[in-house]
Amino acid sequence: MGATTDTVRNDWTREEIAVLFDLPFNDLMFQAQVVHRQFFNPNEVQISTLCSIKTGACPEDCKYCPQSARYDTGLEKEKLMKVEAVLEEARAAKSSGATRFCMGAAWRSPKKKDMPYVTQMVKDVKALGLETCMTLGMVSEDQATELAGAGLDYYNHNLDTSPEFYGDVITTRTYQDRLNTLGNVRAAGMKVCSGGIVGMGEGQSDRVGLLHQLATMDKQPESVPVNMLVRVEGTPLADQADLDPFDFIRTIAVARITMPKSHVRLSAGREEMNEQMQSMAFMAGANSIFYGEKLLTTPNPEASKDMVLLKRLGINTEKYEVEQDEAEQEAIVMESLQAAKNDKFFYDAVK
Ligand code: SAM
Ligand code: DTB
Ligand code: SF4
Picture 1 (cartoon, rainbow, N blue to C red):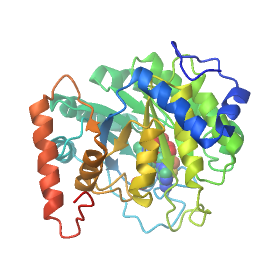
Picture 2: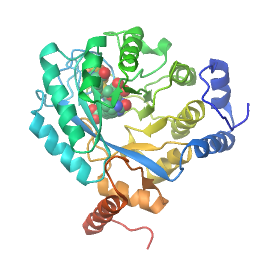
Picture 3: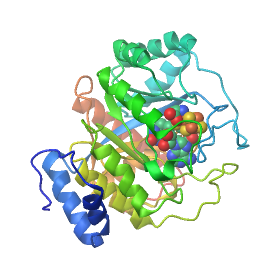
């Protein structure tokens, strides 16, 4: 199997994917780079900002999650945010350079009474000139259609891990439930964002299994978040052993090779990664990040630090063609850099 590919293959076998994982690291990185450069500008990343529109008190039992009501993580629960408050956050995200705004709710699935609020959020955020994404748990065919009708661009729903390991992590909804939601999102015409978490104690064959599920979908997800487990005190996975960083990078590289046209997002866990590891993830083909001080409930690198890192690597942020022009983006980058330089903890390693 060569590194280049003309078309997207969705007939990957688990064996073929396992062979990629087992390649010598440099060979794997080389293949990932070749594929990445066929479909993307390697010096561009897409940036999304997250907003937790409803926090905590979730009835599900996902063992990694600080928002499950079953674990005492000290998290303050919050009701569904008012539309105007969400818009304020979206405006701030846009002015600091994000092109996509992702709204997440700690729900098993949205209730009927929630739908008018979330659809209003989609319409108003879109009107600001941002791409919209939501992650609200399971959605029915009707709910997916309603969200698509409001103009929602992406729906995020992760498979999280392989079908075999899944039951060790979540018992309150099945793998098939997740696949059904993804099917409803696709049928409603939205773009699919689906990925998983690395570092939960799964084996390499589970990483193979996760990517196999994603890469063999009739249409591969347009966006594939690869999260490194954020170990939160109080969750059952709080004391999980450290992940070998190269296993994480390998997962990114194999996602890139098997899903060549998808944006692969270096998602949760960046706060624990040094700059070298993040840049290796970009080399492996990651071309999207979450940007802003907070993920949903846990910290993420400061936006100004990210801008400095991207600048040092010569990486530009991908434009959302509909709204932003180059001058506007450049102004945002310069403002962020200035803010970083005024920060007394800023250390300009380039000097
Ligand atoms: N409640 C909805 C659901 O689970 O479908 C949406 C929000 S949920 C927080 C979205 C995703 O965030 C999860 O599927 C999981 O992949 C990721 N996530 C949650 N907690 C995490 C953690 N501690 N570390 C890494 N990823 C995490
Ligand atoms: C995804 O794959 N990762 C994001 C987003 N989709 C919704 C969430 C990460 C959450 C990390 C833990 C937290 O901050 O609560
Ligand atoms: Fe609830 Fe989503 Fe957290 Fe699972 S991942 S406990 S569904 S908020």
